[in-house]
Image (cartoon, rainbow, N blue to C red; front, side, top):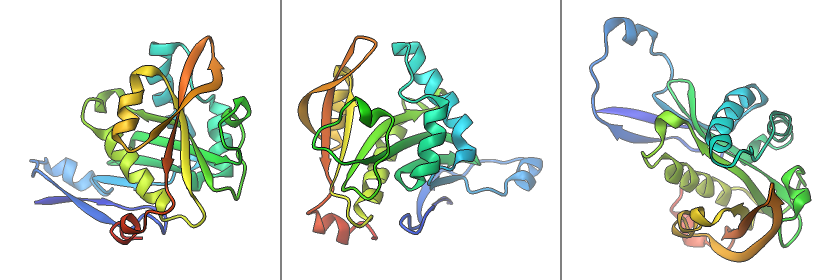
Length: 209
C-alpha cells in the first residue's frame, strides 16, 4: 500500500492516507521526489497558481473573483498561517485563504483587510482545480483547515459568506447560518455563515493538536 504524507506548519502534524498502488514507469519513478499529497500553508510564491485556479472557478460562474491577484499576494504575505493548500506531486490542486477580523459580522472592509491578533478568521475563498472537482476535495480540505484552526491559540470562530446554492455544503461541514450578509458584489447577495472553534475540547483531544 502506498501512502500519502500530509504535513505543513508546526500545527499540521503529518498523517497518512492509504491509496491504491499505481504502476509507475521507471522514468516517472526517478522523477518522483515530492510527496504524493501534502497539505501546507501557502506563501506569496504560490499566489499565481492560487489566482489561476480561483479565476477559472469563479469567473465562469459569477464573473467575479473573490480576491484579485494583489489581494492574494497581500493575504499570503500578511497572514500565510491562515491559508492552506493541497498539493499533489508538487502541484496545487485546492486551497483556502483566510484573514483575521475583529467585528461580530463581516462588512465590505473585511473583503480586503487583515486584522491581526483577533479571535475570528474570515474565510475568503475555497477553490479546487477544475481537473480535481467532484472528488470530495473541497470537503476534505475544509475539514482539515477547520481542524488546523482549532489547534491555533486564541481562535474562537470562522466566518464566511456564500451564495444560496453553497449554504447546504457549509451546513454539512458544521457551519451555522447567521442570516443575510451586508456584503454585495456586482448585485450578488450572500448568506453569512459561522463555525465555532472554541469550546470543542473533545475535538482538540482527538485531532492531534
